[in-house]
Length: 325
Length: 263
Image (cartoon, rainbow over all chains, first blue to last red):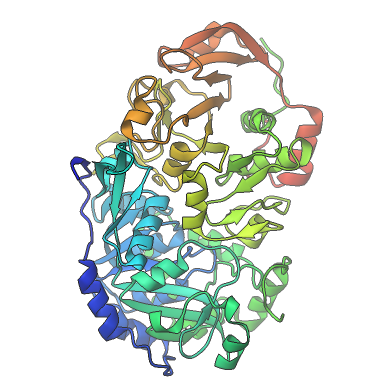
């Protein structure tokens, strides 16, 4: 197959056979209790230099408590997959944890934009759809997947895609390489101790990201009985053998929302949005991240159970989410 | 001198966009103006408009009022017909199921390529850096008809974008197909705060087809930094209707998060 054009972006890529062997050896099919704390999970499963992927964003059912823990532990040199992201990139870049970002959507705020402009982080522009497709290829165990986007754009040139002539249609098509992240962090509604996870509501690529990634940390609002999983298996989004760690983290998406359960903490978000330079970012991190020892401690600081109950009440739309039913 | 407008530029663009959408068609919607336009259209004109969102919501009847950050949350996803995830949603678009796309742009070139990545400086050291493609590249590559919403400023119309985030007609008819993009897709109309352009010209260069009330063709061309075609008959755009403004201001966006206030 003739390569007509190549994007210039650096790619994180592993041979599918190496990934398969990893999954054979490190993703145990045994049913055993994987519950640990977030601190232990990040110590054990997030290494400096890792390629990291999260599902959805810090605004909606995001793993932002794990992101705070990553900042707390001062992880370095991470390469982020910023497909459909918001505060996540800003928080992790602000915490000095990031050296590269694959951009679907860059995230927000002056701190992040300054870091990009000053080349403190190296960016590689893709699109949300192509980053999602790369996770799909990674989950499928194939080295690439063809897409009909990126073509004719500068986004193609900054990406690591290749344009080839399709051997079937004879037309040009873009190939995007599989991504198999070192670590995935995913916040879910409910999960059992083995890692069978339920997500209620739409999302980005939870299944693809979990299956594609070499180490998977799940945080869950509720820890449920494995028997409950077996009585309604159609609700399981991610099967246990994809998962390495399960952390029970109530209110783990705060200040974001978990749809159908609790609403955004708009006041806290507005405080975050106001951050406009490194000093203000540091003050925020000092107070809410370095100044708290874990998520429970953080939740106390932002108003505790009383505030969380307000956010539950603020989430007036419940229909379509399976809580309690 | 025209009377002081009783509506904002954003309201003007939203109303034009809302009227352009068709009933019983699907539209790929992004945050902000496109959301408001689709919500208004669904309520006033096109009850069976199927909104789709990149995060996997198909056919929602979004809760009103619109709230800041209403993206992928329960209000955005309310009363959808299907909740799925990004890849299946992109399959719908790539597979030909999505009729309209609506995008904002920082720059546009004569053939409708748009930039939402950076302006000025270089890619590595940009003067102004934006969020990048998001789902924009897919919207503009896959939807049958893509509508752009853009504040009309001379500097936004350029002969060459600083960065082509999402491709337009790439210099002429057949060029999209030659690049490998799905056939018969591309920008449909550009709705600005002063005018509407389409691409219904033999060379696929943008064409002025309508101007805002009180603005002549020359007024608009003077504020458009590139050479464009002008339709034989340039229409005058109908300003926002009372029922549209009432719905926008009282129901959809009473906090004026997106539509703003008349100054």
